[in-house]
Image (cartoon, rainbow, N blue to C red; front, side, top):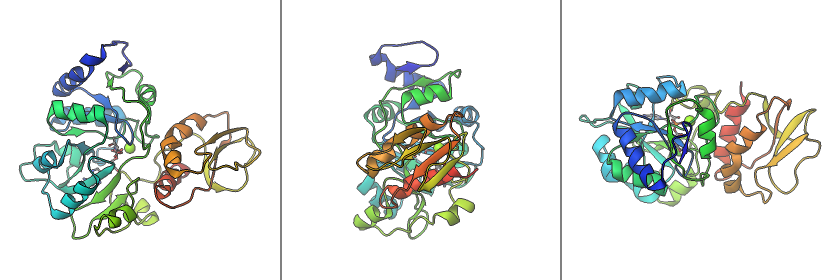
Length: 321
Ligand code: TXA
Ligand code: MG
């Protein structure tokens, strides 16, 4: 376990300590296969509001509640056959289902930002699956970064986002996927993608499930998923996409075997041109290039295929000030 309070504990006590903290309304950073989350007991109003406070997140932006499985999901949401099919195909995994809250839903209204829906996901990481099993209840967790900043893919990123807060960081290594989950609205007759992620519309259709594709730019300006605001993932220096030439003083975020010449510094997302590898490296690469020593970050073109669409979505947000 990493701790920003230097209270190191033996690993066997770590999960029990995390459960005790959740029960006491305190926060724990949790590893998932996508990014690290800033977690609290999703039924505890004070604990959930502490997440908003620590992230400085606008209260109109609802949170994902993490569950162990479909049985736990059904304690909170009015389940339907679209959700059942999606969960059967992709849970545990990087897919978040937005569903109507049950009338007797015990979750804090804050996770729904006061609305009538709830976003649920069963994460695929052994540490957090164990935690969910021991806690036996929904865990609210947005990405463990200050609002508007790049999501953390390593435990060290979380510590550097929140160096002085009372926070236990559960160690789970570098995250495998590196980009946040696909968010899909399951309230209507045809599920509709609100945020692109590693589970693509093509993968969903290949599983025999009808889905409305992400509407990209249109949703960015009038987001149905309130977190899909333009200025997100913002580095402190300018970021340009699809460059064919590096400008003076720029650092290069390269992709593929032939990086552009002329950069003062370069990080390659994937020398092999592998999109999954690029996604896993994306946020730590942006973090490492976010340095006022450079005039900006120039990003080479990333193909729109597969998880490339989610990579370009996050880069687009990082490029808009
Ligand atoms: O991979 C992930 O999804 C990570 C890990 C920690 O699970 N979590 C994450 O949470 O990215 P966050 O809070 O950074 O993003 C959640 C997204 C936001 O865009 C939010 O607006 C949307 O999901 N969302 C949450 N609840 C919603 C709801 N009831 N209706 C529509 N969108 C919702
Ligand atoms: Mg986030």
